[in-house]
Image (tube, rainbow, N blue to C red; front, side, top):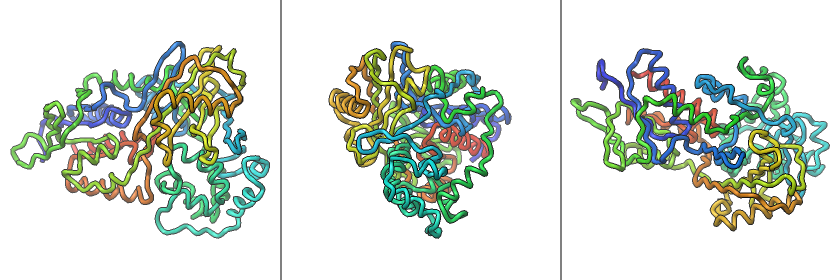
Length: 482
């Protein structure tokens, strides 16, 4: 049904970065294309931003959700430029780039030349103290083994163990790669997480050789000219006043967009009558009914499944599990903190038996986050198989994290304050077959509920740039049908 000459009404469900970027590009591209749309954002939370949440406290800039983004992923930089906040971007500290991994209670520097945990500089790899000589030799067998990629998808853990051995997976790959998803490598899809690994094996018969060639052939990052050189050379970027800078800018850019904050969606109701004024009604828990010609669902997969299950089969959405995590930020007086940092932080494998999974030396990695006479640490708690740690009572969690920090760093300083942020069911886990599953679901959705779309971290990547890219793609898809 197409209402000729009428304004197309679009309801975006979810006010996180996926929903906000979708709304921004819907508004901007509709104006450019001369199409009339009426946008409404609906979110059960009282404020926009989703997991992005910057706290300004006593001169500290504290991220309670994500703390940065990969500089090589340009959608977020392009959006910052379009919002006029590119000058607010900031690079990580030049002397805060070395990372460490814990083994047997000690911190070992990540070997130089590791690309997502894959050794590409074999000289430095053979010198690492993170692995035994047997473990290093087993990893290098990858160079001689025949390619054995199975048809279709496989788990990231199975792939890496098959190619480079269980020891490097346990002590390097797992804390590094699983840390991105708080996941279990044995259950994560390689095609949905690191497809370049499988491509390296298929094309070159070796993960290590293929990664080396990929790095050699990789075109230089086409960083925008307006970025200073220091940012072009930084792996990660953030904003001087925190990631909420982008949320505030999107809020301003979307002032003409209607919002229904603090009001959850109860039902999406199709209207079958040819005389109906719209395709759907979006019914809110408050009882308000929003007519909609298009509905874009950007909430987590389990919330999307609850909304869509009465209307369409949602098995694929139910297959996307979510892991609960927490981050614990601790501030210290530098004068009482008997430790000088020469890197960005450390990762903790499961085998070390600590509560924390990683620790960022935030005040050293990001100089804008702390007064000069203070130290700021951010610790991560919770991962697949150990979500209980993230849900410990506040005092118990503070005590456990502080004990881990004191044990690893050998300090006995007492925090000035501790800030706990719990993120229940926040990390989507992409199961084996995820890409085929979600493509199948989207096809079914388009056939059975035309005008209803899904996007967000459950589909196209968990990072902020991935969510922005997928939000823009969804916006363009919707506009192409108007």
